[in-house]
Amino acid sequence: MAYQSYQSFSNPVLQRERLGYYGERDGAYGASSRKLSLFFATLCVVDLFGVFPIVALPKSIISCGLYGVPLVLFVITLQIYTAVVLGRCWTIAERLDPSIVAKNRYPYAAIAEFTYGKRMSVFVTVLLDLTVFGGGIPNLLVAAQNLQLLGARVSDGSLELSFCYWLLIIGLFLCPIMWLGSPKNMRTLASVSVVVCSSVAILTWISIGEDRSASGGWTPFRDITLGLPPFVQLLKAYGIIAFQFDIHPMLLTIQVDMQHKRHIGKAVLFGIVTTCSLSAVTTLLTAYRYGMDVPNNVLQILPRSWSLYLTILLVTLQLCLSSAVGNSALFQHIEDVLGASRDFTLKRCIIRSTLVWLGVLIAEILPRFDLVMGIIGGTLTGPLIFILPPLFYQRMLELEKLYSQELKRSYSTESSQVSEDPLDDSDTDTLGETRRTWYGSIGSNDSSMSMAMVRDTARKWVASLSVRCKELCRFMYSDCILAGSVIVFGIAATLASTYYNMFDARDTQRWFSCLSAWRR
Image 1 (cartoon, one colour):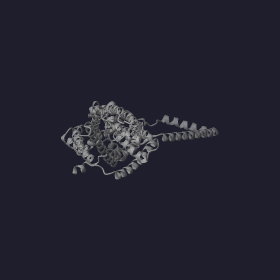
Image 2 (cartoon, one colour):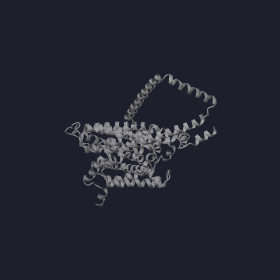
Image 3 (tube, helix red, strand yellow):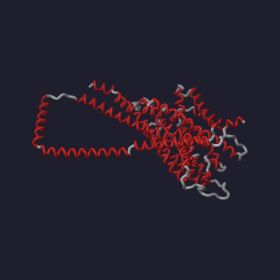
Image 4 (cartoon, helix red, strand yellow):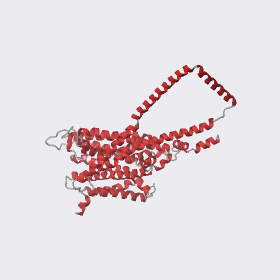
C-alpha cells in the first residue's frame, strides 16, 4: 500500500492533476482577494474598446450603407467566438500544466509556446508588441486633434493650437499614468473610463439633437444607398471594425487577473453588448441627421455647444486612460526582456516613458488616424483575432485528450497492480469444468448457434454504423468545422486588407507631417 501511494504521487501526470486542483486554492499564486471580479473585468473590456466605437465607428458603418450593419455584426460575432476559445485555451493550459501561471505577464505567448513551441511564441510576441504599440497611436492622434478642435470652437477660430503641439502635451500627461501596473491595479481607472464612455455617448446624442445649423433644411439619411458598396470600402470598414473591437492582445492579461477565470467569456460578452449599444444609437442618430456627410470623427461636424466642449474633454481623458490599460501587456513584456523589476522602480518609469514618446514621435510623422487604424486592424490584428485563437484551441483540445488518456492509463496501471491476484486450484478446476461444458454444448446446438452468430453480427454492424453516423454528425457540428471556417476567413481578410492598405498608403496624397512643418 505504501508502494502504491508513493508511485501515484511520483507519477507526473497525477502530480499535475493535484496541482491543478489544489495549487491555486492554497494561495500558491497569490491571494484571490486581489483578483478581478466579473464586474471589474467587464469594466476593463469596455475600457479597452473606449470611445472609438462611439466617435470613429459611425463613418465606417454609414459608408457601407445597409451592408454596414451585417458587416459589423459578423466581425463582432467572430471576435466573441475567438475571444472565448482563447480564454478556454488558458483554462485548459492551467489544468494541464499549472506552472504556466508563472508566465501570466505574457499569457498569449505562453499559450503559443505550450501548443506549437518556442518559434510560434516568438512570432506571437512580436505580433502582439507591434499591435499593442501601434494601437496606441490613433489614441494620441484623436486626442490631440480633439483638443485642437476644442480650441478652435471655443475661440471661434481665433486661437487654434496645432495638434502637433497637443501631442507633446498629451505625452507629458500620459507618462505618470503609464507607470501603473497590471489591470488588477487599475480598477479605479477602468471604472472612471466606463463612466466617461457613457457620458460621451449621451452628450454626443444631445449635441446631434440640438444641431440646427442647416438653415435650408436637411434630408434624413442623406445620400445613403441600399446597394452593395465597393469591395475596397468593405475592406476598409473591416479593418477599422477589427481594430476598434480587438481586445485579444489584452484579453488573457485580464483573464489571469480574474478571480474566476472561466467567466472571461461573460466579461467579453457583457463588454461588447454595452459598447455596441452605445455605438449603435450614435450611428443611427448620425446617419439620420448627417447621412454620408459625417467625417471620420463625429465630433468634427457637431455645432458649438457646451455639450460638445465637455464631450471633447471627456474623449481626450478616456483615450489617455484607455492607453494606460491597453499598453500594459506591451510594457510588462518589455520590462521582462530588459530585466526590470515587477515593483514600481525608476527603471520601469524610464522604459514606459520611452515607449510613450516613441509613439508620440510616430504620431507626429503619420497623422492620419483612419489609415493607421486600417493598417493595424486589417494587417496585424487579423492573425491575432481570427487565425491564431482557433488554431491554438484545436491543438489544446488534442493535448487535453492526450492528457486524459494518459491519466486513465495511469489509473488503470495502478488498479491492475492492486487487483492482480493468482487463481487457486479450485478456481482453475471450476474454469476448466465451465469450458468443457460450454464446448460440449456447441456440437448439440450447432444450427441454433449459427443463427445466433448471424444475429449478433448484424447487431454489431448496425451498432457500428450508428456510431459512425453519430461521429460524423458530431464532427460536422464540432468546433473543428467552425474553427477551420474562421481561420480561412481570417487568412483571406488579412491578405486582402493588407493588399488594399499597401496601395491606399501609396496612392494617398502627401501626408501633412508635423516634423516637415517644423522644418519650415
